[in-house]
Image 1 (tube, rainbow, N blue to C red):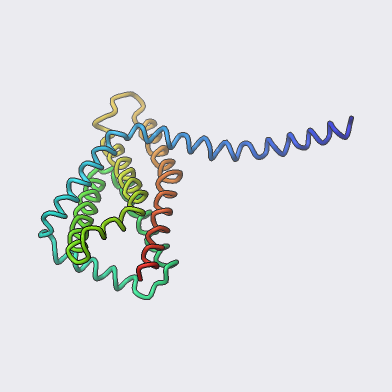
Image 2: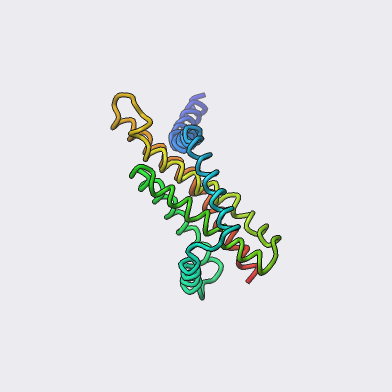
Length: 214
């Protein structure tokens, strides 16, 4: 009986040691999911703006032509010689960097997130037009697999940045500094537990597609 009690106490201690760590990740993941509901309006705005600008870029690929061509050329030169693994890491790194910039620098009244939406939307529309004109409209389906994860993740980051940037205009309660801190913490929870996994998945898929087509 004593042995059984000793063993049960040992097992209980082991379980209690595991639970705090499990609860930490699970709780923060739930916090992140719950906070995404609070940026629903900002996300919808980002989504509409992104696709509107994307359509404009596709129909009227006449603005900033040289700048976009130079950007693409620089990107090709920068990634030349990279293997599929290095290219995947490069894509993931750049997407994560853009996402964190959209959140943190969105504090400046949400100006940067809107700029990111407009820039990404127009460039995507522009490149889609040029690609479709050469290889046909059905080539655009190849953008779908990684876009399923990448576009929502990027737009969610801009939505978080917009919410933070509009804090002074939308929050009228007391303890503004504390509340802003809560918004910022929850934004980083979303970034860590939702945005990063989505961008990693998108980068892996994009890297595989590039490797298969090269």
